[in-house]
Structure formats: C-alpha cells, structure tokens
Amino acid sequence: MATAEGTTTPEGRSAPPSGLATAAYRGISLDVGRKAFSPAAVITLIGRLADLGFTALHLHLTETHRVGVRLPGFEELAADDAWDARDIAEIVASAGAAGISLIPEVDLPSHAAALLVGREQLRLVDRHGTVHADRLDISRPEALDFALELLEAAARAFPGDAIHLGGDEFFAAPWEDEDAQHPERFPSLVEHARREVGEGATAHDSYALFINTLAARALELGRTPMLWNDHVVPASAAPLVPISTEVVLDVWIRWRQWTPSVHDFLGSGYRVVTSHGDLLYFVLSGDGIPAPHGRGRFGLLEDTFAPRRFMGLAAQDVHLDVPRVPAGTPDPVLGASLSVWCDSPEALGERETLELLDTWLVPFARVMGERG
Image 1 (cartoon, helix red, strand yellow):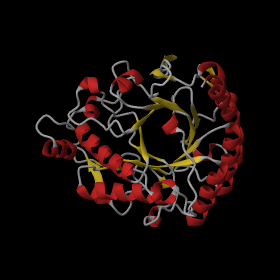
Image 2 (spheres, helix red, strand yellow):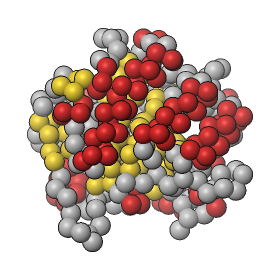
Image 3 (spheres, one colour):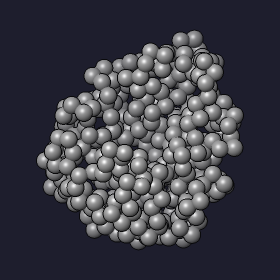
Image 4 (tube, one colour):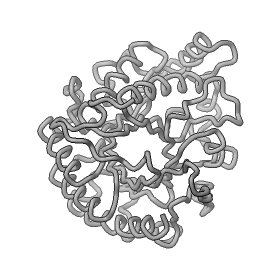
C-alpha cells in the first residue's frame, strides 16, 4: 500500500519509478557515505544516467566513519561536509526531472560506527566483552526504534518507490577464524532470538527479526525494501525465521561453494537484482583506482557481464546465468546495478572519479540495452 510520503516529492510530483516493479531496474549505487560528492556532481551524474537509460540511483548514505547526509532529526550525526536540506532538495528535484529514481540506504546493523556516536550503549558486545563499535546491538528495543527512525528519516528525505536496508557484513566472513565463527559469538543476539522464537534459535534469527521489522515499515511507507544478500538463509536450510520474500535481494557476493547462490534465493521465492561483485564493482581502494571501460580481473565488462549473470564463486571467474522466464510469467530477476565504492575516498578527485566512472556506465548501459 503506497502512501503519499513514499511516492511523491516534497513539491507533490510523482517520484520516478525504479524499474523494480516491472523487472526493468538499471541502477548504480554511489558511496556518498565515504566520499563527499558535491550536489552539483551528483546532479550531473543524474543527467548522464538519464541519457544512458538508467532507472535508479542508489545512494549509500552512511558508512563506518562518516554519515554523508543530514537526515531529518539526526543532523548531529552528519559529517561537516554532508549534504544539508537544500542540497537534498536540489538532488531530489533533479532526479524527478530526469526520471531517475532515488533509493536511499542507511546501512545497518553493521558499518554503523558513525551512526552510533552518542549512542555508544547500543554497540554490540561479543562473548569476550569486546565492544564492536561498528555494529548495532539489534537485540535491544531502543536499537530497533533507532533503526526505524533512521529508515523513516531517509524515506522523508528521498521520495521514491524503494529503499535499501543495507544489512551486509554483520556476521563473520567465511575466512575469519574459529572464534569469529562461533555460533554464540554475540550472546545478546542468541538470547534475543531464543526469547522471541524459542530454543534452538540463533543469532541469524535475531538478524532476520530485525530485517523483517524494517522491511514491514518500508512496505507501510510504500517502499519496496532491498537488502544485500550476505546473511539471507534460504528456505532449503529451514531457518526458524526466514527473511521476508517481500525483500528484494541485492545479490553481490557468493564467497564459498557452500554459501547460498542466486538459485537458492530464487528457489526460496525471493526476487533479485544482480550487483555482481567481481564484474560490476568500481572501487577506489588503497591498491589503486579502477581500470577504464569496466576492465576487471576477468576482462572487459562488455565481454564478461550479461543482464541475468550472478556471481557463482568470488574471484574465480565462475558465474551463474538465470534463464529467462516464459512470456506472461512474473520475472524474479528485476535488473542489475553497478556499484561505486570509495574505500579510499581520496584516491581520486570528484571530477576524475566521475570521468572514469563514465567509461563504465557506457558499456553497462550498452549490455543492458542490447541483451536485457
């Protein structure tokens, strides 16, 4: 059920559709949490996206060390050079005029250190008593209230039909040590899950409860909720608390053969977007800047990517192509997205970043147009 808040701009105009509802999503995620892109640069990018047939600009607004926007009611958390209300209004107006949907993301429950300044009591503590400053303790009712308020603030600031919940890199990665992988690493999450669900529940059930509550609020606001795929447990693993299939999975990674693939997610009833972390990631890092024209470790984007191609195994040139569905059948593959990450924000200036990025936008748009 859409609300006026979720579908119109502050001026009362309809916000452009993202393409998710029609399986026509052509997006780009921009890391404005780490790097301070000026409103003028983002507006220029929006115009370029419109020229190339993109439908959406996903704004990754928050990161571990920085909040890139003065969200209504949380202005004190923002960096000194963050966008203010006037900047937001200009970006929203530009996107509306260009027909580009804006999808805000406040990344929780990890990558949250900058959001938790002044709320240190909400930081997650592990079984050794170590405080994890970048993780929100989602077992606490006040932490959930905080997350819901941030979600609503982002929705107020950026009208549209979708909102991204974040949700990545909260639990240990497969290569981390045995202690990091311990099922009771975070006792408060296990206790919360067992209190709410019953004996046998795990920290992953606590995470699912948190995500489902955010997703339900997003739906009340008229937004399609999106989520990075990291911690989604497929139906085949019989989770006690499945993450709602109303959530669109932003599938960027598959670290190991025994971790879920896109086929596991589709078999669980999820709709998906491919943000293939090997083929579609433009990253400013300490190791250098991206090569032009979408050139990655496996070759040119134009030669290696296809609109229904998902990661089969990280860094192994193994990919999974999802077949087209029969005519008249709802398509669970909703589209694809480039991702711009600024791990080392000073590695390249703003103008140079966008000039280099354009050499990725063009082949991506060509692939999506010719083979989508």
